Each structure stands twice: as structure tokens, then as C-alpha cells.
Length: 232
Ligand code: 9D3
Image (cartoon, rainbow, N blue to C red; front, side, top):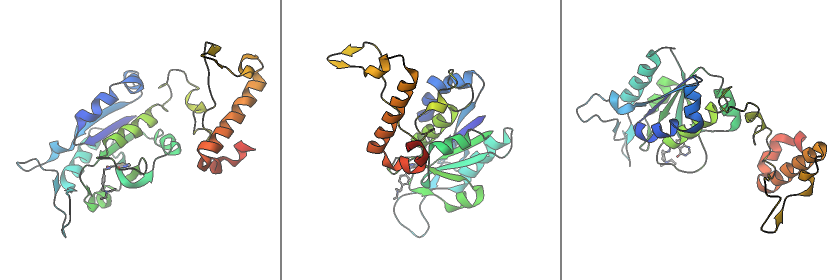
């Protein structure tokens, strides 16, 4: 997989992609991640990438030229047309199922905005998917791009090192995780539930399933609607 992140702040994104699992996945050849500065494709002397909105109003709008040229530039570096993703508060809210779907694509181009928004012709001409990561206001798309890349790359076969982990995640089965414990058996008067020390694997599995369902019911009842059969 190849992922290009188009941004006005490549220096904000690069350290994140150079750390931890993302670094390992790149070293293992599972993914190549490159950040490109949209400003490199500005053509005027001021290297501007934004302008005042036609019709008036507050703020600035990200202009078409540099964004189109940046997309065309990275797509021309082999592979042809990529799956284009615009990070925007107006996008579809990103979920685990979206990460799983994107993990099956060969080339992703993520476009991060700053300013009040994108010139609408970026949507019209580039036909990107639009993704939001949740209902809160960020100062730009970079943090959202990091979230999407992280969620996708860890799903690539070989990225985690211990292969069955991703399938056991919260959200893969639609439930929150059960409580976990490690040594010591007692810590400051708090003990580990007896069933986990019993060695009875069936009882452990049943206890964990019940705990996961109960925790989900209390904290995230919205998730249960998607998984009625898990709760029976
Ligand atoms: C005036 C209306 N604002 C929308 C709530 C304008 C606006 C605010 C913040 C436009 C862009 C931004 C920057 N945010 C993103 O680029 C962004 C984002 C987000 O703010 N929340 C959740 N997901 C995302 S993905 C990109």
C-alpha cells in the first residue's frame, strides 16, 4: 500500500508516521507513507494556497490550483488514480468498518485542509470520499489524517507482529473490551477476580463475554444496536 498525505504542515505529520507500528510497517515494506506540502504547488510569488470567499464572509478558502496539482503530482508518481480522501468536518464519520474497507485499497491520497473550507470544485473535480473523525472541531485535517492512517495501517497483514490481535479488538466484535489483570494477584487490597485464576478456560471465556456486554451496555449502549446477536 502507498499513502500520500497532502498537507500545509508536513512537519506536523512526519514524526507521527516515523514512530511505533507505523514505522515498523514501513520498514517491513507493508506500506509507504509520504507527506507532501500543498504549498509546493502554489504558483504565485507569495506561494498562497487560500483566498477570500466569493460572495464575501469570514475566513479564507483553500484554492483549487495547488490541491489539484498536488494530487496529480503524487498520482503521477506511479500507480495512477488513487482512492482520494478529503478530511473535512462534513465527511462521513470514520468507523472501524471504514478502516477495514480502506485497508483493502492499494493507494490512498489524504487531503488535509486548513482555513474555513475547500473550494467546492475540489469536491467536484477530484471526487474524493469525505471523512470526519468525529463531532468536535479541529484546527485542520492533519490530526484526522493521522487517525485514519494509524487505524488503516495496523490492519495490514503483518503490521502488528502478533497476527490475531487486530481481529480481537474492541469494535471488531462491536463490544468494548473486558477487564484485564496481570500480576500481582493482590495490589493494595484489590484482588483479581477468582475465575481468572481458576484455569477453567470455558468459565473465563464466559465471564469475559458477560463483562464485555455489560460494560458496553453501561458505557456505549449505541454500539449494542449494531450487534444484537452478540448480546443474547
Ligand atoms: C464554520 C464552520 N466550521 C466547521 C465546524 C469550519 C471549520 C472548522 C474546522 C472547517 C474546518 C475545520 C478544521 N477541521 C478539519 O479540517 C477536520 C475535522 C474536524 O474538525 N473534526 C472532525 N473531523 C475532521 S476531519 C478534518
